[in-house]
Image 1 (tube, rainbow, N blue to C red):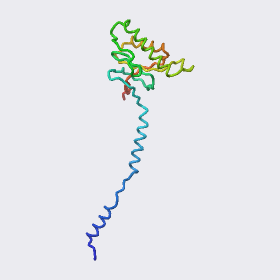
Image 2: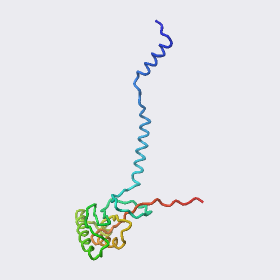
Image 3: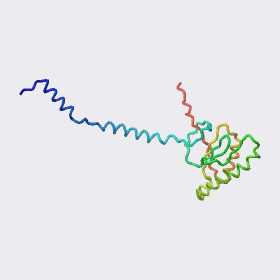
Image 4: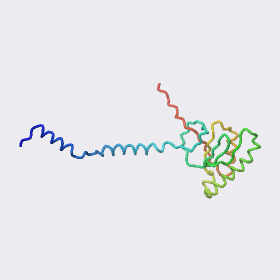
Length: 174
């Protein structure tokens, strides 16, 4: 029996549709390769320090990236070392009331952390142990200076202040 032109066309179409569709993986592999390289290149540019929601860091155009160090956080009502509350109180009171307690508590905690980290070699003794201070932009300078002096007395002399990075100003075209 002879098949009509229409029957032949329908049979070819059915055979074509019955075949399993093929997924072109080459294009997907190209996209994923580009994505992986993009993520690898951009991951090293941003460092995020663990921060407290109550703290508004001062702004700076510093280009130096932070490193993992001991974190000293100054909040409106206390001091935390590595997220652990060391001292709580009111900064607005007379410093003779809270400074001795703060000095004792902070010295004890920093000495404990230094003992766990081990002894410093000669090159590190000249610089001291690294520490990053996270303080609100409204933190009084006198308080920062006192905390830095306490840290320096306990081998933590390589001090850094955490800031929120601003984009550098772009020069205007003439």
